[in-house]
Length: 436
Image (tube, rainbow, N blue to C red; front, side, top):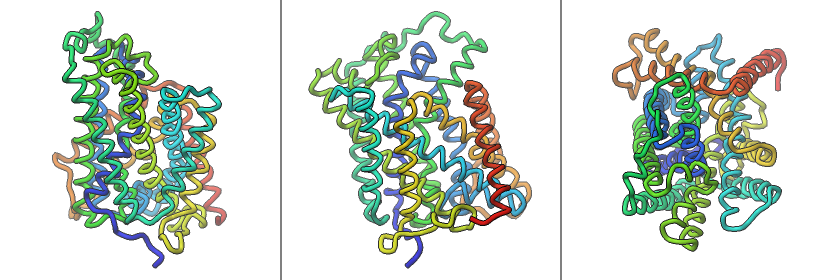
């Protein structure tokens, strides 16, 4: 059998989505978001991230239910933009993913090594060794069939959810409302600087929400995808948004925001303040497990993208190979792991997080939303297993917020994103004249 197996149930797919979304994200971004917004009004960034995720989810749900294949956006962009432009758009996505996906893995590995230093003091070089070793371990962990991975994902999600619920319950049983809702002067002056800060803070919150679409990358391995893909996406976002917002408010009710914004280990600091150092060590160990679980789901989903493109003849042919007995794209997994290993040694966490978001906005998120709108108007009798309500309002609102976040970023990241697109276009036209 030389094809992917539909072996992931709704609960398994949702578990993979949720552990992808949580990861190390909120545990390293909370201080950045508080600092950028300058107080408890940072909750607005989390609300904006949740709103954008829901609006974008309507697009992903339509596309994932209609084209449940391996590769997610690679397939969607090709279908949406047709024969003339679809192949180029899908190639641009794969080119971007070949850089962005290893960056996502590297960011989680760096965050893992950062939190580990709460338990074991590490030098900068030792942290790099830890992050690189973690990537290698994840590749070994993923070197197995999809049924085994599905069962493992449910166990991982149970630990992730239990840890966050423990934090939330602890926060609200020790909650100081005056601490949580004491805002600095002019906190809600809606000046241009306020919106710039909101945009930059939202980059970090959106990073923590990313992953709600992971199930679309695994479309060819989902049982009953027309029903389970949309359900998995919306369940994931609703659950994670509730957890994140509760966690942020809860932490602000225990740790003064002036202190929290400078904490390298916000969760460890939180538990140490409430229960002492030993409990903080246990909580830190659970955060490390969460980071590991998320990277497990991230690498699983993204390894299917180059595979889908190669199988379609739109990327290097070697990436189309499946493992002869375990039936997973092992070449794609090894390549992703190799680049993630290198990136984890080279870059800083804060810069990686911003780059991950900004480089994807134009080619992936905005293009998909625009493509869905065009598809509806071109095909009056369009048959869709799932249709977004109030079309096209969710897609338009999503585009508007994505553009707001894109142009709120620093010039260097905007130019970097445009540079990747231009480079990808050049590579595409070279590729069209040659064969891989």
